[in-house]
Structures are given as structure tokens and as C-alpha cells.
Image (cartoon, rainbow, N blue to C red; front, top):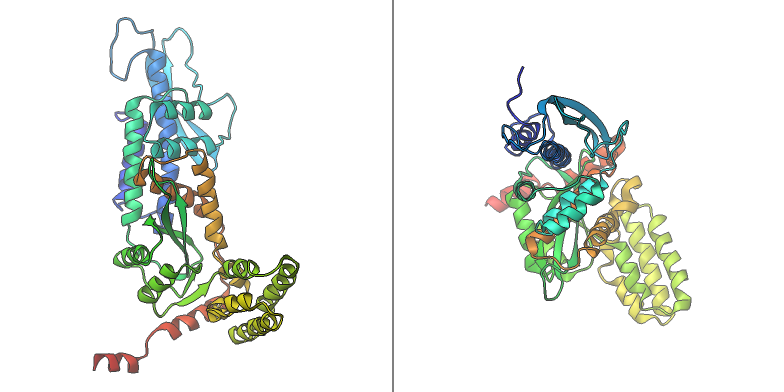
Length: 424
């Protein structure tokens, strides 16, 4: 049967169907990852289609007297193993030509394609406003040759639409056990001070890691966090069981207003840094060991609080009043993780998971310098965070873990008596 549509157009239709929610075979939590896989496939497909146009000296259905001899003769599927899994690229075939057409994109017998350069192409071209010099440099790095301005413009438009789809998607189907909130400060504009980019991602009851939102937060003030939380609520996100944050006052105040019934875990790593900064060098290692021992050996939340208060007393008796006051401040929030499944406590007691992802964002932005605007900055953060989180392992809950989570969920639900009092 004769093919009437270019393979790249067919991939575009797949992307449109995914964004419109027509495809029911893709789980909502895997939507962004599937869009990323299709995006890599689209970049490769367009590159090879434009490569054959340049080789023949004319576009599809175009006739030129000066063009080299040769006719298009269908496509041959080429399967490639990439970092995103196996993808299929339709390589154009040519007949009646002076020499056989060989794509420079795929070397002979090469079965694995490293897609880090492709990710750099997709993300870098988008965030840099698709400056042709930048795109050409990235294409050369990826071995893709030249990319036309029309292809660059289409790619920019599609990626912008994907980011908007991410920020507008329905979250009502998610039930979060744990929500991580943190911010990163980046040079968002061509001039001026760095601004905060707020990030939210969580772990669902099914163990899925899911990126929830990336938005501008200016100075990470209370109103900025309130706006992020209200946006999540408007899109249907239910209150999480546990919220893990650092000690930013604006963030803590916002959590009290947004999710008053949720457990709030203060990052134990941040708190230890604050305490150690108030101690002389000779005491830091000893206090550090005692601090982690108190949390690691605690059997319950109450036991953890007792152990930490003992350490507070030791610091005060030794004359380290500032360090003791720092540890005693909001001490209960340091031990909330002890209510949750044992094997996940060490991970959920700090914002390290999110900070590692933000560290990857910093690594990518270092080579870019200052961004041309907030859309470019947010898009890069979203793309990098999604790649990192999509590649992370699922959190595994056994039967005992699920029973404990169900019990905590029941404790968070208001009783019928409370509801009647409120109604009265």
C-alpha cells in the first residue's frame, strides 16, 4: 500500500493523540516519559528525512531540472536501542540514483545510539530560543548534520506545548504518600539577581515517583509557595500524608495553610548543618555521630524526640547554647518520619532526593549561563527533572508498609463526629 504521510507526520499525530488523552494504553504517570520518547524519535525521523532531501537536492514531490537523479522508494525500518528503550526510525530508500543513499545518522551495524546528545539537542535548542548557531553546534555534537530553521521552529513549538500540557494536566488520580518541596535559584533573565524556581514531586501509594510542578518563585516567599500549592489543588491533587521540606519560613507557613492535616518532616540534613555551624571544629564530628545515632536507633517518634532532647541538654551543659537552641527549635518535625515504614525512613527524613535532581539542573544550566527568560528557564528545569525522575527506581511497599500507610491515612481523615460538629 502506498504511504501518503511522512513518518514524521505520523509521529506528530501520535503526540497529538497523547496530549489529547485519546491513547488509553499509556498510564497517566508515564505520559511525560512517553512524550519524551516520541520526541527523541521525532528528532531522528525528521533529521533523516531532511538528510535525504539534501542528498537528492529537492523536497518530496518537488521537481528540479538541476537535481541529481534518483527517486524515493519507500522506507526501511531501523530499530535502535537507546537510553529511552527501543525506537523505530523509518530510513528513506532511493532508487535509480548514481550512488546508494547512506544515512550519516546511523553507522553501519550500529545498534545502540547514545541519546545524551539528542537530549542536549531537544532541551538545549528549546531553552536557548533555538538560535541557529546553538542548534547547529548541538546537531554536530549529536552527529545529525544540519537542521533547518523550519524544523527548529516546529520543534520549539512542540516542546513548549508539552511543557504547557505538563503544567495543566489533571492530578486527581494521584494519591501521595510523600511530597517533597524545594527551590533552586537560577539566573532566570539576561540581567538581574537570581530568582527561585520552585519544584514539587512526590511518591504515590503505588510507589511511583511523579513530578508535579515546576514554577517561578522569585524569592521563595510564602505567597510563592501558596500559589504553587493552590495550583496543585485546583488540578485535583489531594493532601499528601507527609510533606518533606527544608526550614524556609515562607514554605513552612504555606504548608500550614495548604495541608494543615498533613505530617510535616523537616529536613534532618539541613538542621544538622545549622547545628554544626554553631559549634567549634573539634566538636562537630562527635555531635554529628550522636545526632544520627539518635535518629537511626529510635524505635518510635516519641523515642526519637527523647533522644534528641537528651542531645540538646548535653549541648547546653557543655556551654553551646546557640547550637542547643537551634536543635531544640521545631524538634518534633525532625522525627515525624519515624511514624512511617522503617525501610523508607532514612530517605524520607531529608530533601536529598529532590536536591540531587536539582543538582543535575545546576549542572545543565552552568554551561548555558543566563537564560533569556522565565519560560526557557522553567522548561529546562522541567525537562531535566523529568528525565531524572523517570529514570529512578520505583519505591517498593510490602504488605506491612501498606498496612501502616493505610492506618496513617485513616488517622488523617476527620471522624463523623468532627464532621457533624463542623456542620452544626
